[in-house]
Amino acid sequence: MKSEKSIAWLLLFVVPLGFAGIWRMQRRIDAERASITEERDEVLLRSPKLVKAMSLEYAPLLADIYWTRVVQYYGNKHLRGQANLDLLWPLLDISTALDPNLVIAYRFGAMFLSQAAPGGAGRPDLAVQLIQRGIQANPEYWRLYEDLGFVYYFDLKDYQKASAAFLEGSKKPNALVWMKIMAAKVAAEGESFETSLFLWKDIYDTSADPSVKKNALMHLQLLTVKEDCKQLDALADEYAKRYGKRPSRMSDLVQAGLVRGIPRDPLGFAYVFGASEKTELNLDSPLLEKQLMIERFRKYVP
Amino acid sequence: MRRAGVVALNTFREAVRDRVLYNLVFFALLMIAASVAVGQISIGIEQTVIVSLGLSAISVIGLLISIFLGVALVSKEMDKRTLYALLAKPVRRSEFLLGKFAGLVLTLAVNTAAMALGLLLAMLYVKHSLERSDTVVLVAVYFILLKLALIVALALLFSCFTTPLLAILFTVGLYIAGLYVQELRNLPIEVMSPPMSAFTKWLSYLLPNFENFNVMAMAAHGRVVPGALILQNTLYTVVYCTIVLTAAAAVFSRRNLK
Image: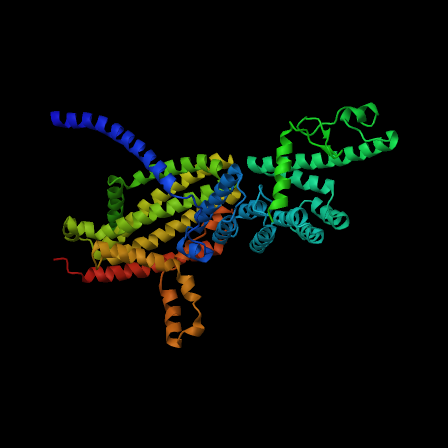
């Protein structure tokens, strides 16, 4: 009885102390290994057919796991500002092969794939392939046609195909009326501020995910900035016509009665005229960094 | 039949005494963890993952119980020598087997029903309300139970003529083979000789087709399972179990228990 009690007391000390030691040792081992190994992303099994065959009857669960991997992979890369998203396609390929009805993987996967870096992999061609596969498996789901039109419109600038996708989607059950209107508008006008604003706003309104919402909001804000700059430049031209010189400050436009107050970006920072005499974002505006980053990647990443 | 019922009831009591239903605690913890965690680490699959994880857990836990307890149904009685005392009474060997089978299926039914309830509660937590289309989850649970009944029958058959270890291996092997029956049917017949082609076709119908019971993807996406499939799968299980249990009874009645 006494020995049992002493063993119990010993355990009480040995277990926490032992595991505390293990924890410290593991941290050291991790640090040691991190210094000698190069971090690499791996997808060991790349064949969707093989993964499906190996999943026995648990393919839907495995699809959810792979989709979570997609989200984690994309999220990590996004956080680190890395543009290399090589594993995005194989992971999406496997996720959708395991569960062809996992529409979320087609929708968000296409968004991750299509957007130019750093927001995405810059592979709209693969995004189209993914959505078309999704349409094949879920032909009645109109939102996939919306996504297809979105990729053609924003990333591939193929307005005829975008219009065709919107039109095809408008024929599906429960499709919203604007799909038909959008088809006609895109076919007639190509890219326009109103259409772009509407499409991003729809994503912002319909998505429940905070990161997707944030991304849509950023695009909405940058679109507004683009449109504001265009209009302010037009007003600056008007000012130049009136006074024979271009305005150097926004207050010149206010004094000339062309605008009521100092124009501000969606975050409340006043616009400025840059060295090229064109309207630009204020150096203090957080939107400037996002705008520059997108422009830089568009320029350097094919 | 009454005697088989008594054996069944005692098998159920024994399973409860052996704390088989403790797995429910594990299942409950898994569901709670999944309900809370998935929304944090993924996008848009909270409902899907709860259903597929819940059904997978029900299936895996049920498989473990049905294989390991199914094999032990006969061998344990023989090891403990309780079988001899039982068979000395007016209980036929076939009644003993049927009772054992029914007892374990009853245990699995209670266990599966409790897990299904847990799954529905987890779905309620994630979705805040249950819809009519969610009944497909109950159909999927029912199909899992049918599959488990078939596995118990197979485990019982193998345990009647071989050692527990081999019986487990045979049951697991047949279960995995039964998941690929469709693949066997889809083999390219052009590259096979006619007798080989006939053999694979024949084999594909002989093996239990466990893919019949797999409606997990449909349940995860709230798609309706046709009533005809429910009826066909029920009949398939009844007929297949009857064949396997008859074979088991035949083997067991000839077995020398000395």
